Amino acid sequence: MSEMKKQVTDQLLDNAPCGYLQMDTEGTVLQMNKTLRRWLGFEEEGALEVHSIEDLFSMGGKVYYNTHIQPLLQMQREASEINVSLKGKNATTLPVLLNAKKDAPERGKKETFSVFVIDIRQRKLYESELLKERKNAEAALKKLKQVNKDLEQFAHTASHDLQSPLRTISGMIHLLEKKKLITPGSESAKLFSLIKSNSNQMRLMVRDLLEYSKVDEDPSVFSPVSIEAVCRQAIDLLKDAVEKNGAMFDITEMPVISGSKSQLVRLFQNLFENSIKYRSKEAPHIVVTHKTTNGFECIQVSDNGIGFEKEQATNIFTFMKRLHANDKIPGTGVGLAACKRIMRNHGGSISAEAAPGKGAVFTLQFPRE
Image 1 (cartoon, one colour):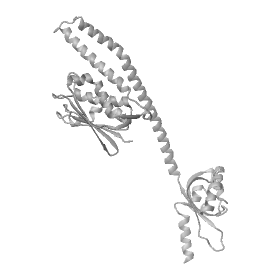
Image 2 (image 1 turned 60 degrees about the vertical axis):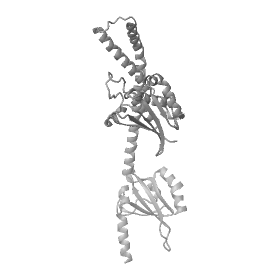
Image 3 (image 1 turned 120 degrees about the horizontal axis):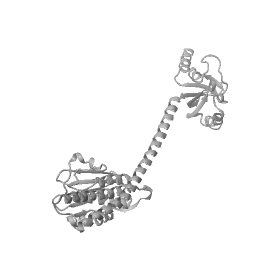
């Protein structure tokens, strides 16, 4: 019965889905199953074609075996998940994982180790493909960053260069008005009004594009910034619009966050300007509140303006996307896109909620330190 069990065990071991070899403490190979022989290109039957396990290693592999694997087996009597390559017949190379363990001692026999071999060719192929795709992705990302950088530089240069002719046009328009060269009510007056309106719209667009192209900051140069101080500075920059519209502000206690002060001033200036621009018949009332939630500093800017449809909550952050015609409410559609970009630079997010005639609420989420 014992002999029959041994035959069954040997047969199972010989045809196992993993490789197997047995060796003594000197590394002499005593037996090798058919699976491993087949992987290495050896004859499945007959005498072994290798004498020592070292015969299965390249020169570098032999060094690794003698300096790492063998000492490990001598000290711990086992080794797990050792990533090596075995050398087979006709210079074939087989990447494998080795798992070795000392066999149960038998009286009168040498100590032996059972070494189980797992073929990882598919895994290596997958890793190679993954590495290749990663390099391709990194190259594409690098190229995309360069393209974005070039586009930003173009926008900055174009916006800057356009300011000079626009100033000339504005000056000529002012001169025509000053000298009263346009007859009121005439056809030329209508054309002049159209030129003036489009000139102002172009000036706003150039200004906003120039500001948008500047929204780029390295997080490594961020510093502690008081959001309350940022809000006060943004209000000062909008002093004329605030006084003209009778805008009122309520600002609760604000946190100090790590960021770019200039960008954050631009962020709140855009949001406050937006609330004033899209005011209702009532005087603009802008409330800025803060709370800490889920690891974020959450700041909300709410107003009592005209609001917008719920379906437009995402569209309003799209670059140069506007919900109103210029003849009704002038603008460029760049301000909120810049806000989104500033929040992204700070590792945060911005979202909006509103309803027609019920104002809007902008929620800013900054990651906590």
